[in-house]
Length: 212
Image (tube, rainbow, N blue to C red; front, top):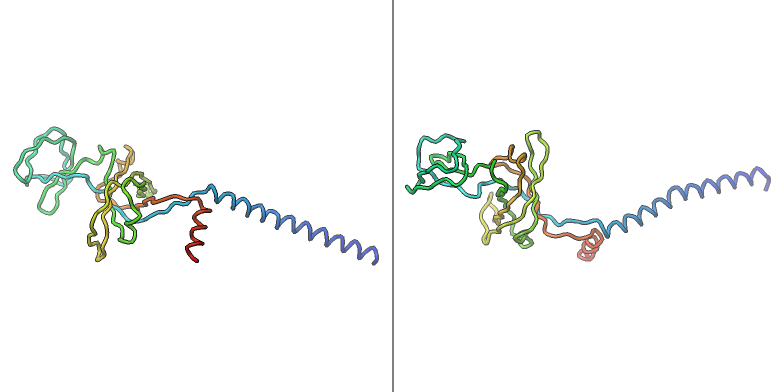
């Protein structure tokens, strides 16, 4: 072997080792880091559905010249639809429901809001009272806002929703003053119910075991 061939073989040997070091070693380190990270990263088991903001109570009023959106001040005397009298305990707002007038709590004064959602019979088994809930809704700027809360009640018997048997789930969400400025009764958003948490390692392991 002449000197030129020797130098050429040394050149390719050096470059091959350099390529292996640059590609294989970082890839191996990345795999190790991902494996270790799977023990600490948390996967959430979630039930997703759509929910609507609803008043937690309403008062049916005796028909009078009420206007849609009319504000009623705390302390005034009201005549209910059944003829009984009642002193309003909190500020309220009037909603005209067909020919009936109802008084709903003023949403701007509610630190907690009721959101009702419906889940299928195949998902209701994993739900429990007190589970964490996230409610995503768009604000005036079209940006997504997330409200946090928990389940306060789960229906004991299914109801028909769009031709399907669904269970009603009632949640209560905490709100801030700035959020209440754009929130309205009847607004819809995405409800995410957290039914459990596990490390990604245990999550992947359970998936692999269940697939066998």
